[in-house]
Amino acid sequence: MKQVTFIGLGAMGAPMAENIIKAGFRLKVYDLSKERCENLISHGGMPADDLRDAGSGADIVFTMLPATQEVNSVLEGKDGILHHMTAGGIVVDMSTVSPSGTDSIAEACKKYGVRFMDAPVGRQVVHAIKGECLFMVGCDDEPMFLDVKPYLDAMGTTIVRCGGTGMGTRMKVVNNMQILTIAEVTAEAILLSEKLGLKLDLVKQVNADTTATNGQMQFTFPTKVFSGDTAPGFTIELAHKDMALAMEAANELKLQLPSCESAEGVYRRVKKSPLGKKDFSALLEYWCELNKIETPRIN
Ligand code: NAD
Image 1: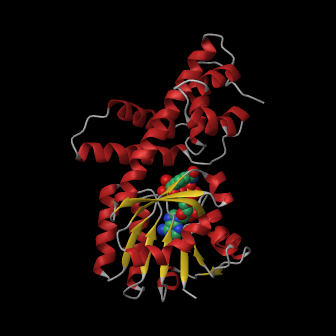
Image 2: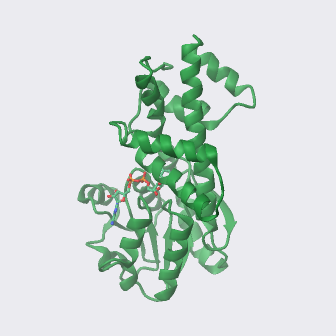
Image 3: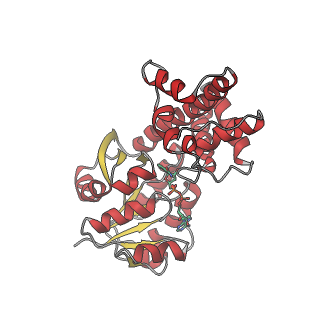
């Protein structure tokens, strides 16, 4: 059996790792948080004492970390896993990082003779728990893809092959830019509808039956902020990180993306408020508080 390690046991990583274990694979787990490691060990994971232990002898290492900086540090930092993996091993980074970040991570792996695949994750924590993730895969090395696929299948239902190395990350940045910009537009639409005296359930119904429809109004907001639940989920902080990734890419390409730029400014502002660590659907609460209206709910 292959030796496989999973690093980053947060809101998404913990249920994803658990689903690999549930599928019958042996899995070493590692996180900076001892409590998060212990939780996975209680579900059948094997402890990695440190990054040296996480990387030594591993055939495949999955990373599900906050951002580019953490992935770089886990891979190439002091005692990072690349110093301990054997040539031919595979790193699969599932974190959402910048396109240029993923390119430099791929280069770092190459330097150590380690193969690299980017496979960032679409969908949300509820899907990760049910083993229904979507993966955007950047990989044109077929044998490597086949080695990794059984683990992706254990965590998800949908794999989209986006092209060669780095293309999964590029797809993820484009997709999250849409999700997060639409979430802000959704919050603004609800704010306006409240001031106009419209009922939230009817606003949602009309949205569903017209081309205005979108996943934030129909899925994210109803399962989170509409029911009064703004525990993350996907935090405003991470949402801002992703909007900043889209703007970073746009700036590098000298592209003007005015709606994206404006939404990035909103997330930057909300990140500094007490709602920064809440679910991104709490955008609605932010605007309601600012405009002194009660946040509407659907029971
Ligand atoms: P999270 O903040 O809940 O978890 C990150 C985990 O990484 C934490 O447990 C943290 O302790 C650990 N960590 C940080 N630095 C580390 C290090 N140096 N070594 C070991 N562990 C370290 O984040 P999340 O919500 O699970 O998201 C992970 C990634 O997936 C992010 O890039 C995010 O943008 C992306 N993503 C999140 C969602 C979501 O809905 N939450 C959905 C899709 C993709």
